[in-house]
Amino acid sequence: MESVALDLDNYRKLLKEYLLTHDETALYQAEQLSKLSVQHNVSPEEIIHVHIKALKELYPELPEEVNDSLNFLLEAMISYGLALQEYQHLREKQSALESEISVAANMQKTLLSTKKPEIPGLDIGAISVPANRMNGDYYHFIYDNDHTLGIALADVIGKGIPAALAMSMIKYSMDSFPEDLRQPSRILENLNRVVERNVDPSMFITMFYGLYNPKDQTFSYASAGHEPGFYYHKETDHYSEIEAKGLVLGATNNATYDQEVTQIEAGDCIILLTDGVTECHLGDRFIERDEVLDVIKRYMHLPAQEAVEHVYKHFERLQDFHLRDDFTLIIIRKDV
Image 1 (cartoon, rainbow, N blue to C red):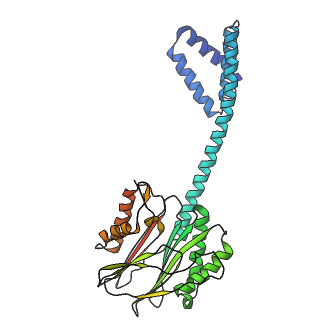
Image 2 (cartoon, helix red, strand yellow; image 1 turned 60 degrees about the horizontal axis):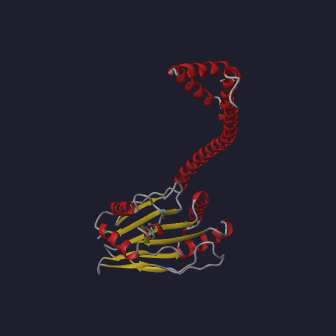
Image 3 (cartoon, rainbow, N blue to C red; image 1 turned 45 degrees about the vertical axis):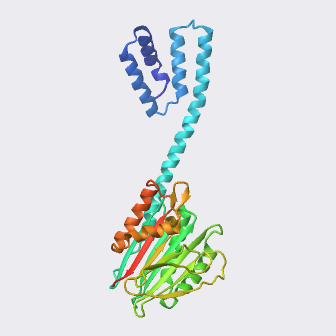
């Protein structure tokens, strides 16, 4: 429809034919005319205006009440048309935003990608699933020339694109540190200064950094307010918490971080996670840490990668397949 005026004669003809004969063919043609009007962005009030004009030409002596009711309908359709245009505009903006978020999510996967190393004597499993399109969790493996393994695990207090940008900054800051600064406490102290200078004060980052040294079979670690992990002692069949004191990254520019160290024995396991695991909802309550550990224990006999995937699927089912927070779990087992 190039213009409403050009179709007035046709509309009047169809209307008259339908009113006199109730012919379904005329009704069908009117429906096609409506579809064509949509394609040419003809507003609802324009169609109503054409209808009123055609009706008055067919029946010049319309009762006053009918004439008033048609004018009432026209005014209502003017408001409807404006609301429809606004809705369509918002849909277009939402579609454009969804496209941008999709591009950003793919970029995040590329920027924050990490390769799970194949290290003799270690069985490593890792899984990270975002609750939404953008992941506020981050993990990274650093396998150095001296065969030490660095494990970084972080969680941004805040989500979306700003969180993804903050994570990218952390990754590339870590990669730029020289090898003599790879000690966990030094890593966190340096990253804290980077975050404090460059990240919005309303955004904080929790982080855990651990360093496995195969030469002396030790695991050194430090934490910046991160969710405590678990350590499995094979010899005593006992689980303990992996915890170290330290402020979240970005809280102050001179934060220091305690560094702990533990001896790794054959069959021992290191279990690292984010609060998306421990703050899983069960009905109207959060699941307790002991319950989380019970689920992990259930699958610890499996290879590490299978174990983390089974634990994730368990909690996914528990939450009716709707994660409320990003879920990240890492298991590292020293071979017997």
